[in-house]
Image (cartoon, rainbow, N blue to C red):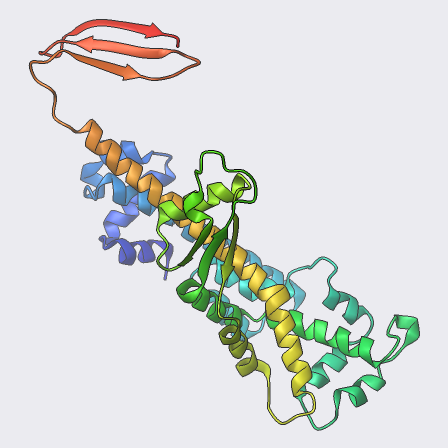
Length: 345
């Protein structure tokens, strides 16, 4: 499906409408200009639809560009399978594309990369098979003081680090956990971390609310409290439920290696997956709250600007400012300007 076809479907527009709007935007025309002077070309969908369509157009084009970049990089690396290619083609968001690219993205030095340098990748793969041999028996063959693997415990820890990173890079698992957190995680804040003289954030000293229900104005208030170092903010969730998703994906019961793989799952979630998804979720909440606030301000401003004139009354208008001064104007009951001035408070 092309970008224009997706826009048609999402905004319920005719193909020719969408094509005309996209062409006008590509020519550098602004949304206010198109909304005011190109109604006959666009079919007059309204300035709000035009603005949302322009934003969506930019996102979808960025999505396709990133898809092509990742596909090309994976092809160059020689790891682009047909399955991976199909998943990239079907990805609907930048997050999905980045999740698919994550296992192949160049990484800074990590515990897993250090373990791989020590030759522990094969041990990690053997542990994950969860066969009949014990972890200690499997690890004995990887003890090598010259490589920094002093004993079987070092070998097993390195192998678990490799497994933890592998689990963290699982795109399907991350998607499932991301969806679960968006529906069931809880946003919490505590404080005050320092004196809050005016009690501005008192409401949020002991606050907890499901992220799916948290109102935008509360999220913005919490963000401000965190920025002002008054509040400590975090996301909480049912850890056992999240770990069950990892266990179901990777753990096989009845093997001597089962416990070791479960330990790798626990470490993966606590150290890698959850901190990453928590940051994503916080960013998403803040972005949606800011977008919602802009919409509310716009609606309120429209009501102010579109209110009917005050007839037969002398009216003083004030535009407050400090650096450039406060502008004042007085009109009479017919709208005639009586006087204007600027004062500097």
